[in-house]
Structure formats: C-alpha cells, structure tokens
Image (cartoon, rainbow, N blue to C red):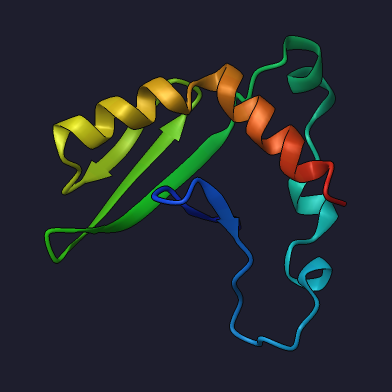
Length: 101
C-alpha cells in the first residue's frame, strides 16, 4: 500500500506504528513488478484510489485502464485519474517506488 499526497505530488510514508521502519511496512515482494508487465512496460493489474471529497469518502478501482468499481467519484477526478494513472504511467510510478528498495 502506498499513500500518495496528490496535492504535494509526493509519497507519504504512513503506517500505524511511527517507529516501525518503512521497509517492514512496504514489503518488497508486494511491490515487485511481474515479468510480463516489465516486458510491456504497462501496469495491467488492479489499483485502488480513495480519499475524501466534499466530506464524503470516495473510491475507484481500476484494472488496467478499465474502471472496475467506483463510489462517489466526481467526474473531473475520475477523468484526471484515468489520464494520469493509465497503464504506462502506473508502470513508471510503481517501478520508481520499487527502486526505493
């Protein structure tokens, strides 16, 4: 799980125990990119985004470029997520995070 602050465009290293080292929270095996994804340079798996908008929880689940489910997602936010976190961009993002390990 990666906590990402969209306002500051930064990864937030957050977990319930502030003294727990980050490498124990983000298991390298969980962020490993499958070989087929590396060959295509695309993230074809599921990615979940969630937050709060106008005091309501929202959530959207993408699988590849398809919307698998969504709840309370404003149209402009949905459009931005589909554009900025397409399969190519998600691969680059996850690869960048994976390099942290």
